[in-house]
Length: 230
Image (cartoon, rainbow, N blue to C red; front, side):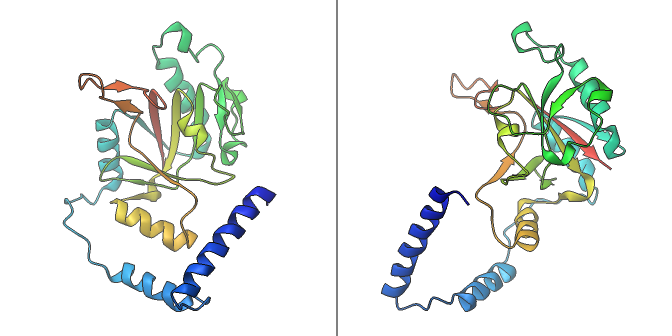
């Protein structure tokens, strides 16, 4: 662990220890954690819209509403060819072209795919801001809003989804849940605790600050293309 991060955690723990002491609380917070988790588990949810049983179709429809483009792919090996199809269909200003180089970055989980055989130069590393294309996975996706859910981590660098012009996200069909409540429930059950950041991505970056005119690519990707796997 980097010394700066260890020092930050030590300082945080010291502050929280003083707070607990002032409140007369014990250092062992097992009971408090169990009580909090029980409260979350039994807490009633508010009104929610009806969601069809076909979560994949609902997700595809809502993602399209959010200006994402979508394609279903049968298996993992088909991902590089699907990315090529998408890139070849783009019509971009010359200064933003990625067709000629067909290069970009991907998450480590996709390093074994045959990118070169598909005519792509894809490096399994985080972007540092100069890459046009980023290919990522997702932790899960939300059918109700067409939203991608990404968790931060060494193997899941979110910069590759946020600092590129074109973000291609791979979503496993069995990881599409009905709402954000289910997404957070999945995070708690599978990870035990929240990571440093949870990113909810609903289509390309956009703003309507100027005369309420929507402009894409304001603070992140101009385009989000989603490959639903399975």
